[in-house]
Image (cartoon, rainbow, N blue to C red; front, side, top):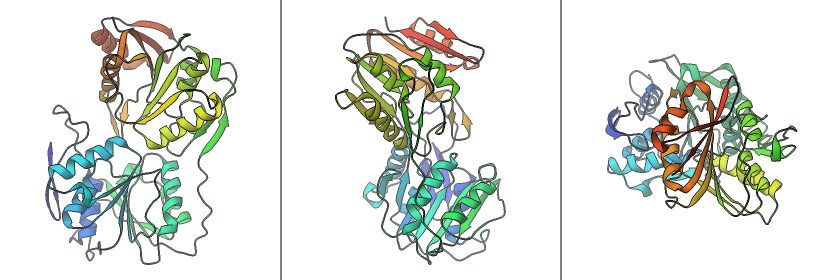
Length: 389
């Protein structure tokens, strides 16, 4: 838990899920710089922004911006692709004495407000997600709208600025402060609105088992949205061959192609697709429905891994865990996925994991399950199996 000094007072903030051992803060220098600019501090050399209209906050990572603005008296609309960011926001609002009803919480799949007077954008890692969301939000801006982006210097590139300018209007950047930078965009209603080019669809290659030749749908922001990444390709070639009625989870499903392949290989299985990204779950549902047919059973769930899934209710978990959280390299997400899988699996149930060899997932799985078998490996990847005894 950390204390964040804003222009309007001090906040107590944490990431979600909260981990007392986690030393990472729930805000960064870009959040600080943006709030100082809005407050018209001496450092920003400007007048305070008018926050009385509709204020939309896109990509707020842990709710720091939304909580600060709500404490100040604005009624922000948060738009996020992250379930974890939404949960962090709810808890940080409560922690700082702000009623949840003071904020509108929308996902990137929801319809945005009809009119946006102030648009604040935390620049995401995915340029595609930024492009898609700017296309969705630009028609809601007007000539008097204030548009400010924020990010670390390493996150803001020429391509980022060109995207704002092409979709919304003339764009410039601030000086860097504490390795953070702001983006100022002046909305121009005359800019042609062509609509988002997302989602992308492509056909999978042959030679990858049940998924060979299938059509995949990728909404913006999904990892490797325009091609099959080599790790998933290796996993698809080495999936378990199982038969009979069972419950399968594609954990961290992305575009859902792993779970779809499992469903095609075993038509009696019921597959649950789980991801913390709203864009990912929408992609997985589109991919599954197109390829598995209307009678295939599936569940699509946006959430924090397997939290909330009944204990000992799952037969098989397929998992390709991420090892990055924004700019940080961490195994915390993988560890939560592994522990959640063990709780959800029935006796004799299996967790299959693919990862880079150097990540050493076999050590964690042996510690947690008491066993771990290498199913397949190549110079870069390894497929591991752990059984709940």
